[in-house]
Amino acid sequence: MTHLISARDLRASYSGKVALDGVSFDIEEGASFALLGPNGAGKTTLINILCTLHRPDSGSVSVAGHDALRYPRRARRNIGVVFQTSSLDDRLTARENLEFHGLVHGLPGRRRETRIRQVLELVGLEEWEDDVVRTFSGGMRRRLEIARALMHEPKILFLDEPTVGLDAQTRQQIWQYLDRLRREWSLTVLTTTHYIEEVEDADVVCIIDHGKIIAQGSPERLKGEYGRRWLQVDTIDAATLEDVQARFPEAQVIGVRSIVVPAESADPEMFRKGTFEGKIMEVRHREPTLESVFLSLTGRELRDRADPGKVANGRGERR
Image (cartoon, rainbow, N blue to C red):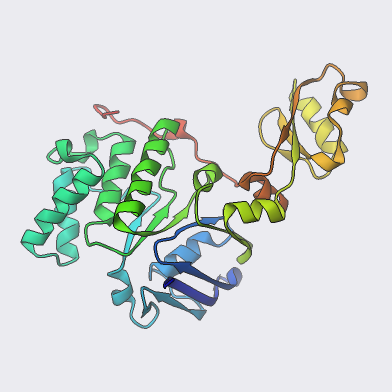
């Protein structure tokens, strides 16, 4: 298969702090590639380099066959980007936002009109094309941003936290649209997300931490190679959780009163008697998941998960 993106030995630093330390990888044409890592791991720097927004200290990047460092404008013609923070003009209508994007990319009038109709239909917003964006719900805005990113027919779609701040139902809908996109348009998709469960079906998952790629492969391969079985222990209070954490150094807190312990380190029965008797609500096994892979490799969960409750609804916003 053709490599649409190839990165070799990328290095970058800010104020003496290393952001990327020799990162190399390839992304095949038509693949779904997920980039996972905690905040500060180097994801943002890497995405900015691939999108030609930042120049590395050293290394090389090829995007759709173009040297992205020497010919960034050629590379940009082949990529569409959905940013984590909305960049729509909410004073304009959906159509006007798409029209402006088409003008920026130099699409001629007739082609621009055709593309507006196509992408609005693709994301199910054709009925709202003349409505002002500030009346849209978070999910509708995200769908419009996906439509906008596709206006100029890119080969590669970058999705930086595409479902951040959205409720579970809307997140599922967004991924359904994206799956349809890949099937019908043969897009290559690179995604960053804090919701690991969203990339369980990705072709390749790449885990980055401290500026280095520490694991890469299909979800099943990573689970088989790095996944661990854990016991999830739900305690009655925070004090008991602290007692469990003190007894098992490798334990990881995953909630206010929940913690996971490596299955090889503990027996479920020990939490039902002795020191913990009467203090544990439930103990259950957790089979290897991408989450467990991440825990095993980095020693922690993805930090700063998005809180849908923090996203404000504007007055008159559709749901």
